[in-house]
Image 1 (cartoon, rainbow, N blue to C red):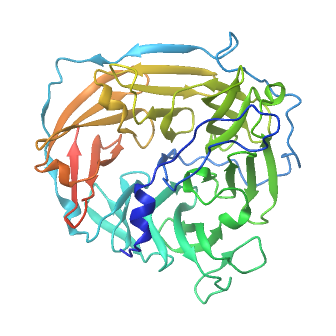
Image 2 (cartoon, rainbow, N blue to C red):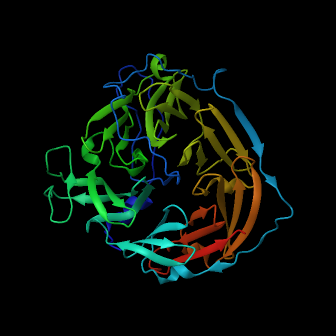
Image 3 (tube, rainbow, N blue to C red):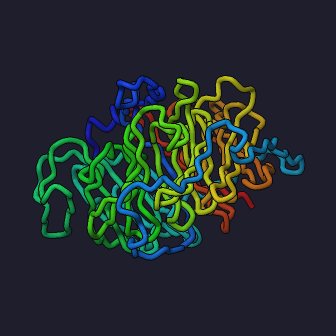
Length: 449
């Protein structure tokens, strides 16, 4: 894999968001500084398309008919609290680990790819079939200057979108292999860029979109997301709002406008948006952000339809991870300092309902991974120099389905694991990337059957 020295700095930095300013003289969100931490989001694996016709979308923001919900108000959607139900018949046992992933060199990332497949980012991008434990397609990275430590992949109706960072130096927009589409007329300015590479189902590249050139603060992958139909990109700007761009025409549609102030009359107090993703068959956008309540900035989550209507804003915690699926979104936070147990919040936008699942260990909130279809999630808790305790939960019932011990000596030499759980195969793929000079990654296939 290509490596650039700046990648270490970027991947180790933190996302700072200190809330919104209620000062009328401030037109931006004070203290909202991004230091380059790209937060991984999960996409629904079911192939559903809303088509590419954008004629129904308004040319500007339309909030007149929006159903605005004030955070923490009596009109806020139902919030239920469930404690994870531990099943004593499912005791902790050592996981049976298959090692078919050892064939890869420089493995640095795994992502869902639909059915029984995952995308493996190593020396090349590989489409790997778990059932047969074989590579069925592979391709080179789209850009030799790419900072591939913060990759993100989404499944589309026709294939995949892979987002990556690159360090541009004023390239030409036309090359002999593919086309780079920029809004500025054909030349990429220097600096960090977020690029979207569109692939078909066999990893043949179709086009590359310069997302940063679309505008806003889209130099961070978690501030952008493609639609499932592959025809649109949603971009958020912390102090301005949410916009959608048509991939083919680069036409901009302003979905939601915020200004960093307490404009509760229009946006339920929402003053900033920090993460976005398409949901509900590309008809709605789920977001994380900040709002102002009684003159103070607070964290929030919510959703809005792609035409700017039906806005819903809810008070939330300092969520760090947002796993978005077609019908619901799983939120978790990195450091739940004020509680004795971990929590996962499951948000159902259409029902305007949130279910809080309270788990047995506080540390479980740190590492939460939604399954490929979202019906389950896996948590990981380190048992120092022994391995990782993996717990599989049912998202809707809050039942603890299974617990496995993934054995690993010298755990402190590795980063936190990245886990993909494939529901139909009842199989988890666990990847651990090494720290420092250690170049030996650890990857295994764990059965939960």
